[in-house]
Image (tube, rainbow, N blue to C red; front, side, top):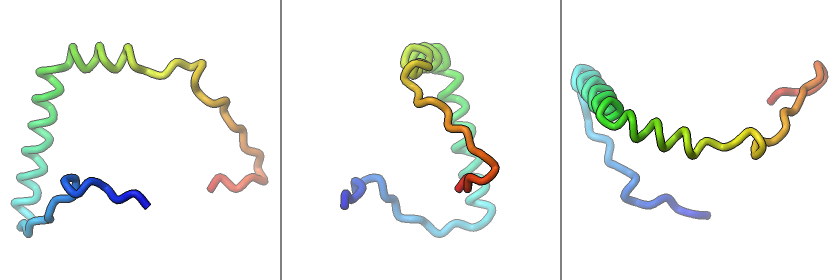
Length: 69
């Protein structure tokens, strides 16, 4: 079994409800600011690296008797 890189695991600090909400708001603002600052580059990258429809597997059609799960 492959163990995840330990640097990806962060200790979960104890936060009050208010502190957790404030931290989440900060992270959303940080992400929004990053996306706004680098929109052109991100858009260019993702439009040139999208998988083409030729590489996608064909859709699988379910019948009423198939279990979708």
